[in-house]
Structures are given as C-alpha cells and as structure tokens.
Amino acid sequence: MQLQIKPYHTNTFPLAGILIKSGQVKHWLQQLQSLSVDLQQVNVFAIPGAAANSLWGCFVPLAESKWKDKSLNANQPCQCVYNNLYIPQYSTLYPIISAAEAAKLFPATPHILHPEFGLVALDSPVNWGELLALPDKAAVAITTPAAPFFIPRNIQRLEIKALPPEELLQAMEETAFPKKQAFNDKPLNWAEKIKLVILRSLFTSNKQESAAAQRKKTGLMTALEKIASKLMPGKTQWMNKLEQDMEQLEKRSQTEMEKLMELFKNNPEEALKYAIPLDEDGTNRGGNFGSFEMSRRWGNFDLFGRQPVSGSGNSVFSMDTYVKLQQQYTKTAQSLIEQKDYQKAAFVYMKLLKNNPMAAQTLEEGKLYPEAASVYLKYLQNKQKAAECYEKGQMITDAIVLYKELKQNEKVGDLYIAQQKQKEAFEQYQLVADEHINAGKFVKASLLYRNKMNNVGPAQDLLLQGWRADKDAFNCLNNYFQNIEEPKLLLRAIENIYEKETSPDNKPVFLTALKYEQKKDEQLAHRTKEIAYEIVAELAETHPDIVSELKNFNEDKSLIKDVMRYKAQKRQR
Image (cartoon, rainbow, N blue to C red; front, side, top):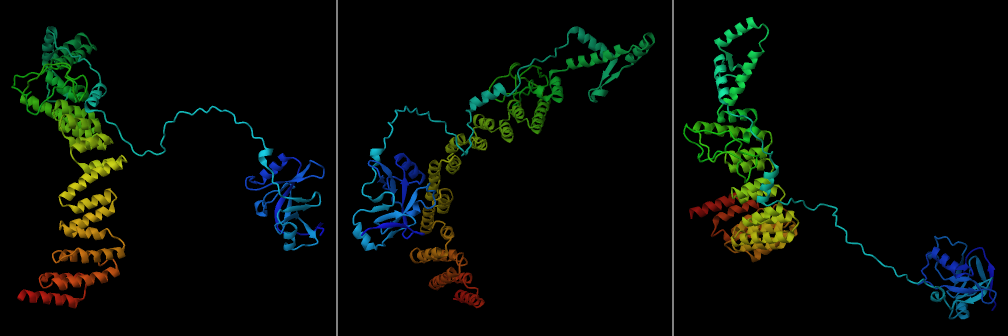
C-alpha cells in the first residue's frame, strides 16, 4: 500500500504534536522554552534533512491542551492518526486507512509523514546530555552576615524596670531639688540699733494692721516735717528715706521665728529650706524661754537620707510656736499639692512634719509610684502598698517579688499573665486552687480552673468532687449544670447524676438545683418534671415539706391545693 498526503480543508484527526523547522538545536530550545515544555517529561525527536548529515528540524509529541493558548511562532501543529502516525495539520491520508491497518503498518514505533522529508520513525529521542555542555561551577566565597537585631512588629507588653529603693532615693537627692543658697539677712550692729530706737520715736508700728497701715507718724515727726517744710520747701525725700530705713531695720530686728513665718507667707518654697523639723512626740517643744536660730537647714528638698546643712541639733521653742509651725507646714504642703508639686509636698510631710504615711500617700497621689513604693518599703515596712505602687507604675517584676512574699499567689498569677508568662502563672494559680481544695472550697477552685487556667474538664470534676463530699453541695451542683450549655448534654448529665450520684440524703439538694434547669429547654422541662415527681414520691413520707417543691415544676393550681392539703394532714398526724 502506498500512502500519500493530500491537502484538506479541516483536520480529520486530533492535534497532538508540533514540528519545529530549524537545523540548529539552539533554536529548538528557544521555541520549547517559549512553550514552557519540560524536557524531563517530554521526548523530542530529531528530523533528518534531505542532504546527508543534515537536520530538517525536530518533532515534539505534545497534546493540544499544552499549547492551545500559546503562540506557536510559525511552528507547525500535527495530527495524530490512531496513535501510530503523525501528519501535518489541514491534510489527510490517501487512501484512508482504518485503525487496524494503522496498527499493522506501524506495529511498534510511531512515525511521522511529511511532504518535505517523507516518512520518519520516531524511535530515538534526543539525548540532551550529549548536546548540552553545562558551564563549570564557579567557586564562590559566601560571606554570612551577622544576625540582625530582632525588631518586633508589635509590642507585646510594656514594663518599667524599677531602681532599688536606696539607689532611687539617692538619685532623687542629687537631682530633684535646687542647690544650696546663702541667707543674706545680718543681725543689727550697735549703730543700727541706736538708729532704730530714734526712728521708732518718729514712727509707730502696729503689727495687727495691714502692711500699708502699719506705720504712722508720731507728733515729733509731724513737728519736724513742719519745720523742714519752712526751711527747705519741696525737699521731703529724706522723710520717705527715713520710713524705708525704719522698715528694713525692723525687718532685720525680728526674731528668727518671725522671719521664718514671714518668709512662709511671701516665699513658701524658699522658707522650706530654712524650716526646722517637728516630730509627732513633741521632742522639739520646750518652755517659753526657747529660741530658734534662722539658719539654712536644707540644701534642697530631698526626701531621703542626708542630714541638714547647718544649724544645731534640736531647737527648743514654746508650745504656741510649735503649733504655729505645724499649722504653717501643713498649710504649705496642702498648697503644694494644689499646685501639683507633689514631691515638695512630700518633703514637707516627711522631713518637717515627720509624717511618713502622708508623704507616701502624697507621692502616690502624684503618680510618683517608684518614690512612693520606696517610702512604703524603707520607712513604713508596708509591702502591700509598695507592691500596689509598683503595679500601678508598670514595674511588674518588682510587684511580683513583693506579692510572692505576701503569699498573694493569685495576684502573682495575674501579673505573670500580663507578662505573657503562662507557665509561671498557672503554677501560681495551681497553688491557690490547692489551697481552696484543701479548705473544701470547690466552687472557688473550679472557677479558678475555668476562668483563669482555661481548663474546663478539671473544673467540672472539682464541682462533682464537692457535690460528692457535700461541701457546699448546692452551689457545686448548680455551677456544674450552669457550665453545660447544650441542652442534650445537660439532660444527659442530669440523668447520670440522678442515677449514680444521688442518695436519700442529697436528693432534696439535687431537687433544689433541678428547678433552675427545667426552664432552659422544653425537653429538659419534661424530664426534670418526671425526676421531681419520683424524688417527691420517694421522700414525701419522711420529708413532708419536700412536696412544696412540686410547684416549681407544675403550675397547676389544683396541684398546689393538694400539696397544702397533704402538708396539713401530715401536721395533724
């Protein structure tokens, strides 16, 4: 049989291959790459040319679905005739052969028939390993960069690291308050004292009146003014100068205590630097002969640690003076608090009034939590308040240390959770749960397991344990039922406890807990009513009052009347 190929207006057989016409293998690879052909999965067959040792191109058996939506770039599709023979598209065989004839003509190896190169057997695929020369691998020295610093995208927690109390107090002492200053007033010498005596004969001074009306002219001064106005008309500046000298000399002639009180009125912050401390026991109070020296006692408003810069040990002054100073210090502290200058206010309470609790409270009110905690620890030995201040100031680690010493394990667990340390938190919660269990507080232990440790199973087991041990049995059972939301599961739990966990002694408690569950679901209402009837029927003879519980499961008025009648009969018996 002689087969011929003739042009045809349509494809008689399915397209299942591509012809690439080129004598260069490089061109074949470029075309196959553009068609995304995997050379490890598809065979490529070389097509010989008409001349010896020449190539016409190559053939790639490839289903149409692999290249249907891609550009063929002038490459020629081929039809597949009964899986054994390939012919160009838009052509047909003459004569037409059947599948059986194709299998007989080409029994083992597929062939391709083309008008340009004739019939070629497709029995030897291209061995790319023989054609392609891979480049030699270059020896590349790889330098591994240093590990970069980890920069988190989200801040998981924020904590402030507290300084040790002693270090914090020393830092405050060095930085919080102004440097030392000298007090400029000097006592009067003998000539100034004589001058003051003369001026007092010319002016009167009334300290009970306001500053503007304190000084008035005496008759002698008035007479001198008249004489001077006649002798030196228009020259009265010397009289004003006398009044100014009088004011300055009187100010300098004041007692040290008077100077201090006046300084408090005019410049409280400066007065604090000279103030003498008081104590609650009154050791600085003395008789009326006492004195007070106006000397600089405080280099700054430091709350902690250092001694006054000058002055004698304990000054002794009258009870009246002591009370006035105490009132003035308290008033100054309150004024500083109103100005939100909490640190200076705390200085007044601690150093001058010797009131450490108010100093700590003032620092805490001003949100100076590290300083407040230091006062609570060092001067008041109050670990509870110190821990609270550390917690408020986000110094969680320091707060945990104190709460552990106070054995507040649940609080420690909460703070560990804030630090995202779940393992440490659960260890603390377990300590608290064990304490509750040993004390028979199964409801509290269960709530801890459920709400803070997210452990529902053991929480329910603890409630059952409390029910069995008759430790707050009603609340244990009620919480056990409340934790089951699915009605079918709740009904199963009710029936299981009724059958296996009840006795004549605890059935009244079980019935009381049951009345809260029967309203949750219609199916529950029916079954709980049956159980209630069974329990009442069993216990009515020995516990007549239990029949009253039926009104919680059946609102029939006639039933209520029967219950009342039954109880009345029991009482008569």
